[in-house]
Image (tube, rainbow, N blue to C red):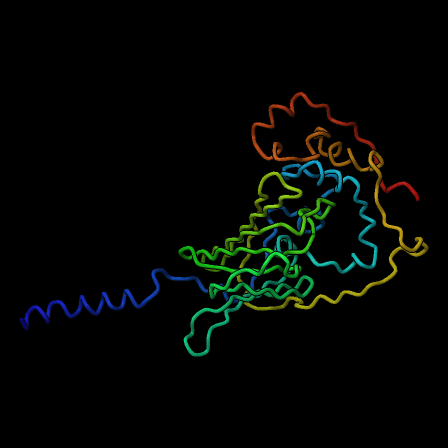
Length: 297
């Protein structure tokens, strides 16, 4: 009897430890992270070309909105400091800080907080199992987020997001989008995967990835001062820059620049897949012609 107790005691202690510890090791994402721009650099730094919707699963409504969008719209006071929504903000030039909030008594994880220097946005990812608010609750730039661990991957679900854009060249996102994210840490590297569903403007989910590297020192600017100014003096009050159907002078500019059929750059889910290359062979490519500005109004 004494031999049995002596032999099994370590096993019992080990079993007890296994059941009292988490089933897997959760990553600590805390720290400051700097984005890497090797992936999609032209879109994420200088910004996408006008009428470049290639590879975006937009529908006809989103395409018409985008073709009606005049870049001068960003000079309107209400748009000069408009925030990127949570579904887009991680792609830009920013400083990202992540930290945990734990219950002071139990040390259980309550939330994971994100701060993005672009537009000084604070985001809370609730980790305590609370439900999402009802449909009529207010929509915000960062939305309402809840998260859970899938192994060592942080999976986040977000809704209640304001209207914004899927690409900042006029492709709109509705206020009915839902966002699923995966934060995956590999040592000092952090991969951010986002999947956006939009029942109003997308026919399929839009998937994007971003890469970050852990900052060993913080020399960046964590503030985003933005002040409204009159960027277009003399414009009649209440005028909203836009293009009527068929008036957009940039429709073929991107296509001609890169030798791509004009039909292809108008996007749609079909343009996301390799099979679409067979159709490209039979599509005409528009001739190059300089377009430097929109027509005077």
